[in-house]
Image (tube, rainbow, N blue to C red; front, side, top):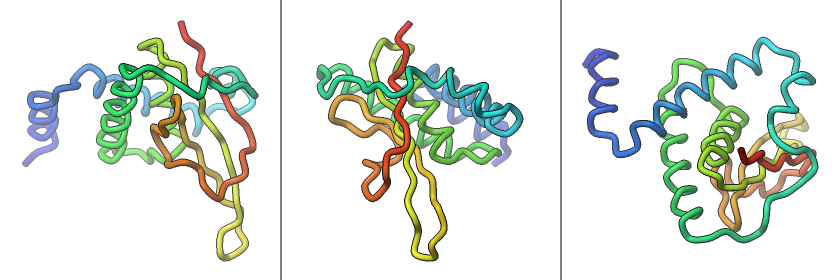
Length: 149
């Protein structure tokens, strides 16, 4: 099936069309910024540095988190560009913030089995980890609480 046909089928049978389109566009935006803009200039857009969101959320926020996690995973697995953990975390955090749900993006690092430094990003909302797992084994380097509009 052609790329256009797959795209049309994806949009036609997708319950979360708007969120999927936004996730696609946000992942493209964040990937572009990571590649071409100095990180010192863009990290202020990531949220409030050094702060965390509350440890608890209501049931509607948890439902939204589940939907955002599924959409981000689905869309980022199919992009033509590299959408690794930081792009996924930023995309999920933006989608949650648009709906008024607070979240925290964590940046961590650890040494792998070969002694090389490995970085990772993940998002938490309440007690649920939306993207990137729970960061187990990673030392938290920084955290960013989402800005709610």
